[in-house]
Image (cartoon, rainbow, N blue to C red; front, side, top):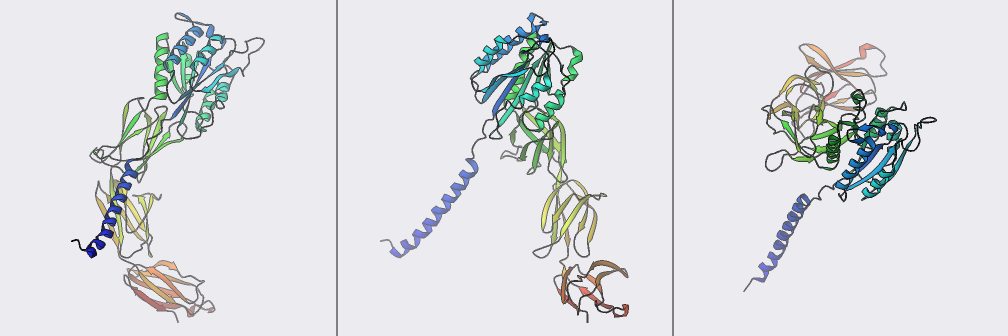
Length: 470
């Protein structure tokens, strides 16, 4: 027969075990059952040149007819693609060149919507070249075409198809940069149709330029550009140690747009269970500057990604450790500088460990008196430990308000440490490093130097010394 008393004692223990299991399982699910990243919505605005020059001949026919045909065929290929909205804006198609050109001749012909490829194709059929080329003004108007984004997972892209350069004294480069800096659009794409070579340099500052020198290259370029806009591109960042191995990790990385300086991504660098740096997804449009927030920071500029591929970015970031130790629960702070430099690199607390890029550093420890240590060496994956003695306390009893100073004796010299607080009348307590000190004090109501009071005292780690100034 089961002992009822033992059974009664067992039930609470069983409940405790079950509760522990439940908490462990809940923790596991919270770690591994994270929601998958949402695939971004991509909005592409096709900006179509319908200026008079599009009547020109280009290989098998008129530029306008060829561009319309190839863009329409391309739209058929993306029909039904998820997470995409497209729009069509044209310029130079509403007013002719006479009696005078219209530098505001641009119009959003088909606004953003899903599954509107047929509407865009139908509108393209009716567009007839007429006027001038107001690229800057058109790009400026594009800024208002994109619906307001309700989340960060929206990518706004402009694809400009043109056979000529700005003809209205505008500054397309400045307009494009302003749109990017405001976060309205990513770096635009420009597809040049049969452009004269002298024009090619005019488009590099606007965005990513592609020269469609032939009809076949135009079609290929369209596919390349939209592939960059739609396909995921993965990146692996290898933080290299002194031996060139990707072993460094657990540090934040920021990806900036190289041209605009806008922050595009922040990731905490991670090495996965297989010992390989984690894979992250980054938009391939544009050029990046990556800052690895080590101490000091490491930068890599002019990063260009291959769209739809797995890209590896390697950067030298060899690190070691600096541990600051002092007995007791609290300690001073330490200013860390590069060797020979005055700029503060970092402020580290005592009884703490930080990682630093390999090299030599100057330390200034904010004790009283201050402790300076020059050329402290940080080596690969090693811990350099700096330990200082625990401070002691001096308790100074004063008969009245009055000026006073503390000095430490070093090689028969008095070295200034600090002034006493003139606003404290009775007892003042100060933490000092072990050593021999002098205090000089004169009561405020004593108007002659002969009333200076001097006391010599010694500070020992962890102890309190009392000094009476009367």
